[in-house]
Amino acid sequence: MEYFGYFASILIGVALGLIGGGGSILTVPVLVYLLGVDAVAATSYSLFIVGTTSAIGSVQYFKKNLVNIKTAIVFGIPSIIAVFLTRAYIVPAIPNEVFTIGTFVVTKSILMMLLFAILMIAASYSMIKKNKEATQQDGEQKFNYPLILIEGIVVGTLTGLVGAGGGFLIIPALVILSKLPMKEAVGTSLVIIAAKSLIGFLGEGGDALPPNWKLILTVTSFAILGIFIGTALSKKVDGAKLKPAFGWFVLIMGIYIIAKELFFK
Image 1 (cartoon, one colour):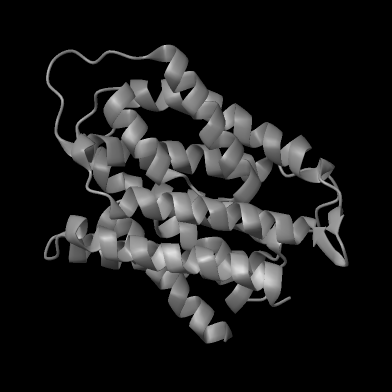
Image 2: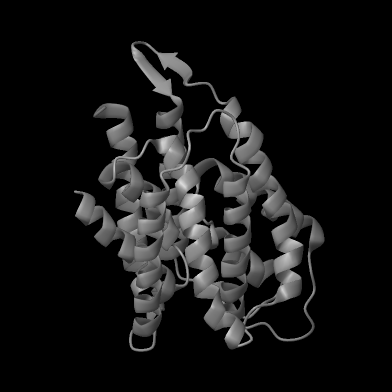
């Protein structure tokens, strides 16, 4: 199961490199179900893995001048603040036993996985539906600052809670609210994800146990290998055509997690 977990770690990077987002949504399930990491710790480890992999993946976009620094700053600052505060204060404040329904106790770990599954289902919808916002925008870039602020806070809080990069939320927001062309939105999104995920990891608070660095760095290495594979494949395979299929896979995974946490514990 451990070796299968490392193989799945490669797929995380492949998905990021091939379809420009969504791969990070697999990180927490891989850590929890294949590598035996506690759900709360997995959301923390995921921040480092996703952040580092996204940072490596963004390098090629910088080289191609497909990263909008101004947008990354405007969107990234509220997102970074939100994810840092969430990891430092909100996550540690959640009790180990959240509530009880009859004889069923909803623990902090179960709550985290259920939140993650809901996010997976939301992510799958954005992957499956036809993306009408992918057309390039012409004219001067204009920022909808109030909406960007709100979106940044929401994405940052979700990232802090469940450890996912949130590219499926960031990319449409950058295209619609910041009027970025699709490829530039993907590159800018990777930079935002890298910054907020790594800073969120540093904001880990409460009584969190020392990280298992051997496991974290091993999974990160496989994910980075995967993003290089995915980038190479993207030159031969149309990632947009694979995105809906990957979305259906993420949807099934989300439903599986809900069923497993609620009925098969």
